[in-house]
Length: 227
Image 1 (cartoon, helix red, strand yellow):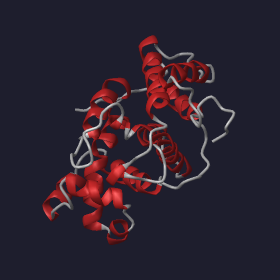
Image 2 (cartoon, one colour; image 1 turned 45 degrees about the horizontal axis):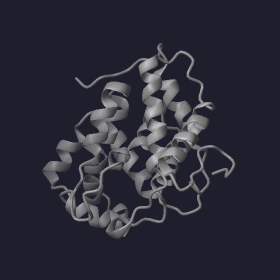
Image 3 (cartoon, one colour; image 1 turned 90 degrees about the vertical axis):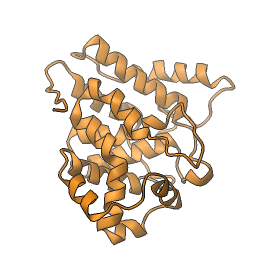
């Protein structure tokens, strides 16, 4: 990331809440919200503030990774973008772990972050964003059952969380999962998720992806819901 960009959280002043709010206000000047309804614009601002407050936090303990939450989100979204994914799936890649923010149940509990995130995302962005997020944990369980190479590439933290999340799927569970709407997107998201853990990888800044969210929420943009 560009260290001069307002999305950078490398050195926060002693009061991180005030600092995050200041960076958030600066960041929002970079986002074109024309055509976005007031409530939807507030949702984007809320997402920006959550990344400002929690994005600098490292994954620690048995969940330790080589990146922090913001770096992981940006890398995942960038991999989706490089793959030519539609904006809704890029958004899902950016937001898939926001359910971890502001909650810490320790290393030995499945925090069901995917469900909390999807419940918040669904009324704002619709199913094309919320459902891959909701399914991305079970997508890992599916992939370790059907793709030996993927299973071998899991980080130690992913192996640990896999056990908490139910382990590898059975044959019947795989069949049922793959039949779900948005399962293919969730499987692809999960592959980017596992690859988005490289220290020092350059990505576009958060403002770029907040712009993607804005494009999804413009008043003329279609929004799918779960049937």
